Length: 293
Image (cartoon, rainbow, N blue to C red; front, side, top):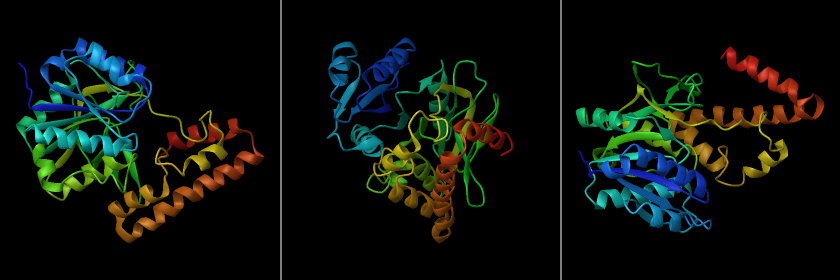
């Protein structure tokens, strides 16, 4: 059954092979014919839009300025979907590959209860042994990912936006994500958290599964630590200061100053340690820390 009132929004920029692989994956599942898929191409210069237009005529392409970042692109897609009387919106990152039936499960959950914001549980790879993105759970002054087991539905405080579905009622209730404040990272977490204040319920369906590997942190990254500090000047960094402060403030108000300062303090300590001890030691310490937190 076709459900063209369901809009799947895929923001992309200059990773043509990843984007096309995602669309091919969706085509094999019948998603391109079942739902309205919209790619928001934010000024790619690698031929992304041309290849999509040639090979995937079912896909609507929206062009961006090249300065939208993730949030601006997803907002452009949401506004387009609303102008087409969309009933349900799906966010899908192009590096996230849904398993068979995953998207249909999310849509069904939202159709059953339009106050639900439903997410898939992501895993590192097809072995399904290492969960990655999904439920975000608020602790005292911290927010952590909490995996959702198979055959379970977990309510939470916010969601990673790799693959989520919600009704258009959410947009009518709280508007659009704040692209000017959180242009790239944290926008998904802030937006789904804001939904709670209007009576929406973020959930993760343990049987709705997608594959999306988690990027390496500073210690395990091939990028030199000094380059990570330099990268903070760009919204492309998950620790872009103005966006990270907005994220902390939205969750904790004025108390957000503590997690805000603490994250940069920890990175300063890691930077100093990296100058005096082998990086392999720090990697081992991180593995030990992750096992006990």
